Length: 254
Image 1 (cartoon, helix red, strand yellow):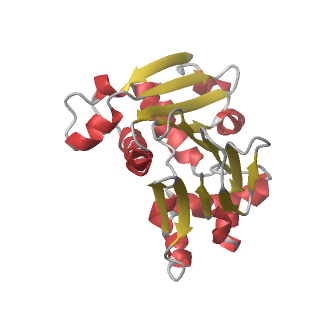
Image 2: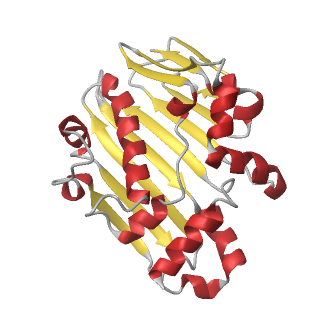
């Protein structure tokens, strides 16, 4: 029954890929250190799957509200380099799954000693999600692998370059010539493009930046600066990637 549910998630997930929300949080707690988290909320997707497959498909989905330490699952892993394992060592994944309440959310979180580590943390998170979704990490619990099996959108692979450090954070489109061909090759985004308007459910990408001192300058098409100027929220819909990819660009200095 478990494998039946996993297969259903993988297949039907591509039909409803517009039903997810992604949130990145970069929080500085000192002059340069802090915490980075990545939240994937697929609760709307779960609700759609229940309609599509019937409630009986979810009898084997156990309610989960647990925290998984990366140190434990990666102690002997060979897919990740030593620097990657060290970067993720103090991180964790919080998994919340409840079919009755239509909840399916995973929160990846890890501290960083320097803002310059955030770029590598983002890459490590995307790699972790991709590999666990393929059941390639031996110590990853099955429920976590199911939650990650629906794929992830990595802007770095679409021609964007993310940089952080020295009092600034930026995400700029550095391959504007080839971005359309890259978008066409991304099967997950193509599903978002086709199914999203039909379901009228946004696939949101939200980024939250919190600093210990006020922001001096910033540029973000869909960004909002807090009144104390220490926090910025940037919110986009993945549909915008096709018509206006530069809407995902931003530059922040503090």
